[in-house]
Image 1 (tube, rainbow, N blue to C red):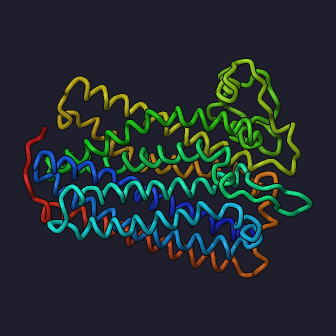
Image 2 (image 1 turned 45 degrees about the vertical axis):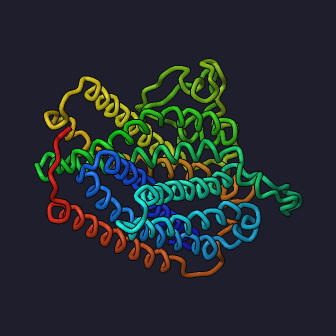
Length: 440
């Protein structure tokens, strides 16, 4: 493994783990706040116990997210010093604000965890909401920095120099809104289905059914609403990418030749050597509509883009297909769930529906990871789109492969520890929160 591949692999590994920790840390506080609010309004002890149980999970993922995020910040400087040398002064503002949001989140979480029976009950609830809002703000700010890499703004690039720097314009670049919206909905979808699936499993096993049924309903509503909204944000993102990054769109759809109208491909095996796609289902004109809102519009293919600026097509295409496929499946599960609610059917009698949620536990995160592969791999060979190539930004320091192996061991160990802590927390529910409630 050469140092360039090792550096990219280390960043991919770090982001792959951190994105899961951070998404759970962003979303879980809102579940916690809803259950806390329900306890304050109904005085149902099960909601109080649920809030306390979820707060333990929030604390676990806050700690792991802080560790993995700190490692990422160091990696940016150590692995990509030339990138940070030029880009740091331009897009440093969202990172600085993210640090502020992180500190607010840490303070609020401390108030919440240790404020039981010590603070005013509504102020205590408010601190939980602050944890969620500040965590969500942190995620949006980090995504804004990544969006800048896809849509550079806030400077003039003249003779290899970055002049007339405007950090505000850099932060609110043309890609930040579409990426932040899509990412936030993905976080709620993935985390919601994972949490709902775990509680559905406990219901199926008839373990503290009242406790887990209330938890399931809260998580499932968040997950299903986000899954229904996700295609709308995906449409916004697709149209944005079509304008700014035609090479990425072409790679997502494995569109080697410019077409008018352009078909949408479902599935297919990509042959990058022959520049062909075999076995794909083609929907005539659908890509033209998704990209430009017109079934007859021309969509730029890779034939109009220099060969040395082509992203890896196969990886991008497969990742995009996985993301869209899982998103569609979760959309159907969401529609089914709301239909069951509309019919006012008892969930405990719909074991097949609960099994669907159990099956969906990992799906949201698989789609989330696939989406980030599309975002990052589809931007290649650029680290700053159209300005700086990734290979020109990597550190000249040798031995990066060893760093990759060490970080891999750290992240695997961290994941094992987190899994153990969560498993123990779930096992402790009957002992710590063994309260009964009506199944309503």
